[in-house]
Amino acid sequence: MPDNTVLEVSETGTILSVINGPHPEAVFYEGVLAPGFVNAHCHLELSHMKGVVPEHTGLIPFLKTIPKHRNDFTELQKSKARHNAYEELLQNGVVAVGDISNSTDTLDIRLRDKLHFLTFIEAIGFNEDRADIAFGYASQNYNAFAEQQSGKFQLRQAIAPHAPYSVSRSLFRKINAHSPGSTITIHNQESKAEDEFFLSGTGGVTELLGSLSIDYSAFRPSGKSSLQTYLDTITTDHSMIFVHNTYTQREDVQYAKNKLDKTFWCLCPNANLYIEGQLPDINMLLEEGAYICIGTDSLASNHQLCILSELYTIKQHYPYIDWELLLCWGTLGSACALQMQIQTGHISEGLAPGINQILLLDETGVKPVVKRIF
Ligand SMILES: [Zn+2]
Image (cartoon, rainbow, N blue to C red; front, side):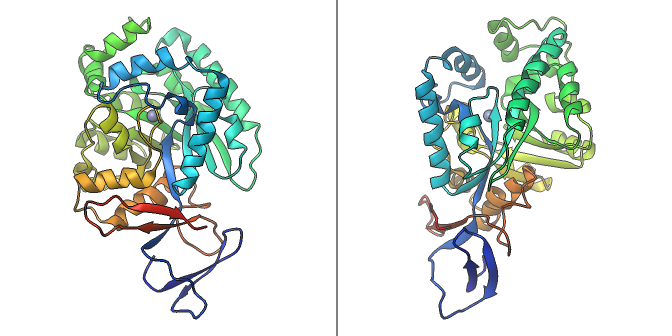
């Protein structure tokens, strides 16, 4: 927000007016006032797995470990962890979340009604013959979420594919046909092994599928990158959030932009550093004019659920990117990615986007602090 701007805010957080100051009754806040953060990619249902997988294992060992230990916890432990994670999001100034779900565990926290939710019901199944079963399971979960009524905060849901190597082409087509115009999200090119699998049918993904006893005998490598293989199953009515993009190449971004009208590139840098120790090529994304949004991924691959911490990590590696642009990625950029710009992501009259005070942005090398003030 520009200097000297005065916000008149109701007790419930609705912005009544935005005035050019100064104003005699205004309360002055140091630092920067910004709209609430939007977390475009999270997995609240995995919150109980904080610290279970060590850092820097690489994606394939990480993916092997999650299903092995996911159910080593009681329902009470899982529920407590989810609720704590929800509180953490609120404390860190988040007002809306794109939350991945392959269970119905997060139905409870959606009803707390302090965050807007777009829950992505994850469909997973690489065996072409089992697409009906995989889609049936996702649909059942989708229906459970769709039955919930929005309160003050919006509750929405959409079915989304897990990743290129875990979703068959038949399943991709079913997801595409489920809800025309919906936002689809996918874990995209998070490891080098992913493209290798689609280019030549070899590498770490074959090892992963084998270890999970998944029959991929019908799979034939396309000789193209993963993105350029699966994207022909998605029609242009959908907007697409590609998540991670750690190994995404310029040609992939160009291909996606030519194929679809609305493409968003979600960065989860702290999770990338946690798992692979590698960041996406953000220079290239900027050069290609990619629409960028920000997520935290889950507490299984992150030390905290804090969008400002993600932005700080980007700033450390790309110091020339202005804070103004970074804050825009974590607010309006992510709101647009979730199609929530009508509810949040910017400071405008009539909106209740949450207001954060952000301190220490100008102190080089010092981690900034976020305080929710409305
Ligand atoms: Zn994820």
